[in-house]
Length: 376
Ligand SMILES: *Cc1c(COP(=O)(O)O)cnc(C)c1O
Image 1: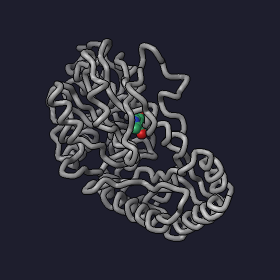
Image 2: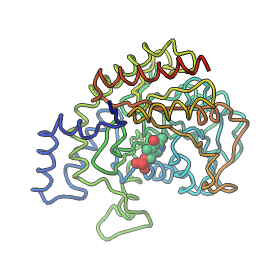
Image 3: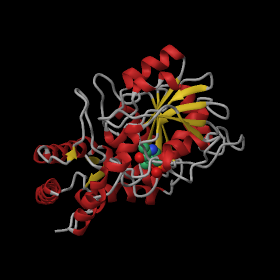
């Protein structure tokens, strides 16, 4: 049996009529850029979060650096984040001209460990940038408490957590901005690139709106910004899909629960940890091998058996040779949990349209490997 990693095409076929109707509406309207459908989607997305403002932009990386820019984060400033994330988190800090400071991630959730933040704060620290890694919220209450006490901004990298909740908090509620990506493989994906900034600050909304459109909020008047707009055709697709996101996230949770129940006795593996009271939306279902030397053999075994398992992320940002070290970033303290996760992580197929047969096939193969690894 072959089990793929993504289910975009299945998803499209499940709601083809809704998507096609929305796309046709755009094609017939002739309003392809900054039209009424984008405005409508921005309102829907803000309402979904229960947060005042949403600005659609070209991608998740731009959402981050435009939010940094709107909040006055730039050269000379430090942003505290984790190295256990997709490269774009730190890349956006670098694009803004600021310095990324990596602290360790929590051993169980792989999100930022709030107890490591305080020691990394310097007079240059301007913001905390927690990542809702794999679809589980970082501990935002602890992050917010530190930010309040130390006078720092908070920007959530929410590329992976649309629809997630924490214990008593929502995304966007405890931050200055929450930045999202709509690239197709994310939980809410358009048919290409897209992103958004969700914020309760009128000023952030106004400034990002201006920056994304060549620094223009009045016809023919400009200041330096960029071109990073969410196309109306993508907004039309997202508008159709937003109606289904909660149902899709519930299916991700159903498959995650099945994986976790059936793999709980696999002695060579550590399973994803759900913080009590949190609503994890499993953008990725990431297990770890207890021994780093087991990771590649398990990954290869799954791949050889037709299962498209992957690693997120096998090379943490601080291990990337391509990152502009020196001015671009530094590590604060040891980051052993980040390094363990990079060495041991494996992502099993996870998307709402999986079938029970596919999930059970994956489980069977993981258990088959685990039994052999235990003997070796
Ligand atoms: C996908 C992702 C981004 C970047 O989003 P793009 O739309 O690809 O620019 C940023 N941060 C994290 C954690 C991501 O997963």
